[in-house]
Length: 549
Image (tube, rainbow, N blue to C red; front, side, top):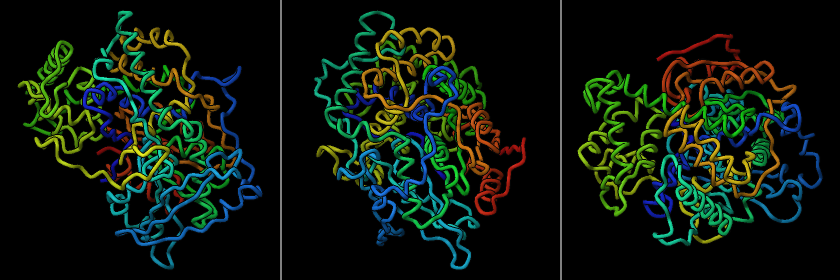
């Protein structure tokens, strides 16, 4: 099964910080989808001016020729071929000697004589490694008809994974006494001061560790890197599939290089016209509704493994655990801190991405938590796919080791740092905390704890370097028909955003997948067939086309 990774949070500092940060990462992880989705529904006066304008054939710029003219030197790396792509750190000053070296991996699957080119994939995040995507088997799960016509290619975006340099935010110098347990809805001045202090400390730690990189890891630059990759692959036009945040990357590419697109699939779409509050409310409501759907449909998906015999019993259990963890964290094996309410909300939310793969593990974890053991839920909150294993200290597949970055402390999985850096750079956020406090009550009314924790997660961007991108509707004149896939029960990138994005593209096509969970391609045979016919033959999807499992 293709894993549409919009977030795969790794461990971040000590467990208590991980639990507290998990709420941050949760909303940002798809709000990394907000990255390109800009903010306040407008740029300037009318809100329709694009934040990104098409670039006039940058390959002809003398100062970019050495990047566009490079050849990829492929070498064997396990079952794949690997190479390194060099891109300028600052496209405004490409001759200053500062670069990113990006790992590229290829599964050479195309049949000689039938090859159409390279299919470039992005797994989402922001902060997910494309190289790891291939290592984890995505190429084998793409249809044979596509593999016969394309080599499957992916890469680590600038600052991510094996990128040199790579981002890190590990250098938080506070002691345990200085860190605070984060309430899901900070109401008092003291609670809000603590939440703000934590967010600012996290931002400061990222600036200390990765400050020189932070202005240069935005999505527009990553999209320009993808055009350099297209040229280095020898492709005249790009064939692309992006999941979740990968739809933002694809949208930016289409806006900057509309006539360089051959085919583009955007699955789990982000609407680039929403402001940060709208995005938080959309996504938070999506997660709340997904947890409600879990209660309603658990028996149909996992049968007797459900932690209750009726939807009412499951809802009562979740409410009981929320009340309990607000008062006192649940014990967690190997941790002196336990699982608090923020960790519980994260575990619930992160289990809504692929119900067919995750709901059974969530059900087991909720049963254990109701018995007083938060270990399995804590593993889910930390993004551990093997959370049902009671040995939470077991090593997991961390994928390729990250390369050295601006410090010597870049972790193997730096997805959390990249997620924050891209989201905060791409999306205009209010300066000053009051705007966030003002958003709490509407978020609570709309989505309860999922809404308030989504708002407070955005506080880290309050004190972060700002980028130039602004909210806008898609402006990509001349782009061929783009296929947008929307899952009706998607909690992370709500379906209405796919509807909106498809309408914004000239000739945009919408393929609807009637199911819970995040994204559709790789989860359903009908969706796979429509996507792959389009990729190979450019077959258009008719208006109103829907798939159901």
